[in-house]
Length: 80
Image: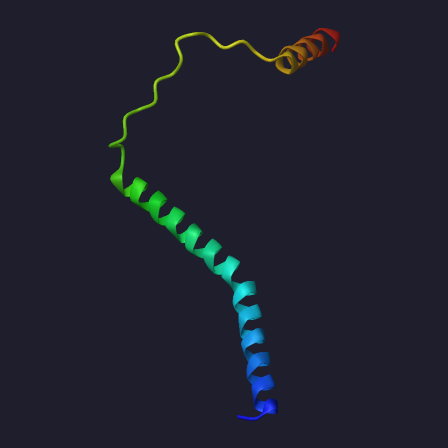
């Protein structure tokens, strides 16, 4: 193997390595998405076997934004 062939081999290995580094994150993400999809499908097939979530016994207080919006709506109704 002469110098020219060695340089060509090194260049090909470098190009293939770069390609692998560029494609690897996409493949990992695709595998992750497929695993999540499989878990969702299995949960849907299991049906309602999971216990229902309990709601909190204390009442919720509306946020300031909700209170302000409700006040604006009631003023509009009175004014119109």
